[in-house]
Amino acid sequence: MASEHTEQVAGLAAMEDRKLQTFACFPELPTELRLAIWELALPGERIIEWSYRTYDGPNSEPRKDTYFAVADERAPPLFFVSKEAKSVVEKHYKPIRASKGISTIWCDFEVDLVLVWVHAYYHVYNMVENLSHMHQNAMQLIRKLVVCREDQHTMWRRLFEHISKDLSLKELMITKNSTGLRLGMISGFDEETPMEIKADLEEISKISKAVEEQSNGTWKAPLLRFGTMIEADPRLKVNTRNGQ
Image (tube, rainbow, N blue to C red; front, side, top):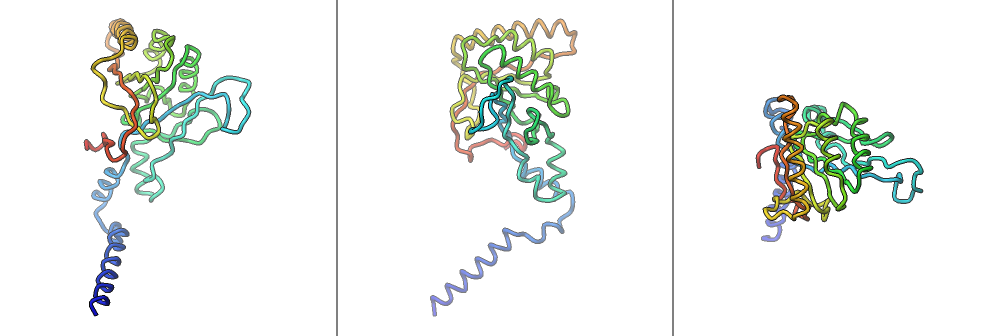
């Protein structure tokens, strides 16, 4: 008898759990409340990576022309839930293409970090060239740019000359490696910055101040930061959009 009662209780609990998961009353909520819930369901800060390759896929032959940009971030899952949820996504995210022929990706330029790899000056040129061809003037939309520095000979002066001319950044971050890139996040920025990076930052700072003075207030230097990509538990990811 006790066993039968336990099964009945378990069955009722499972039924209630299913009801909570489906929440059929959601459409009956006031529109303002539904929209607020969709806003809270948006992802927080993401890393949108543009890498440069000479091949179209892992099993393809190298191309004979030049490097081209590839990005693999798609629309947030909320985009596919309903028309109402999609409208909230489209309010924050802009559709862009990293280069001709790839799928459209979605980026919230005020929140997401756009990461590019720079190994030499020709990569700087390709970065600017590819960004300039993006949909909806992406170069002017990018606010947070992360440059992955794995080459001691990166020409930071030329990189910054392009940035000051073509981008309107709020933050420029330099990271010394890409460990755990796809699972990780930007760590707290180190106080003890390596000497070679410190020299880069000092040089960029001088250039930025000079450009800012010459612009007569029409261009503002971005915040310069240094950090490392670290593997992180997704549960620790901060939702910068909602201040969590």
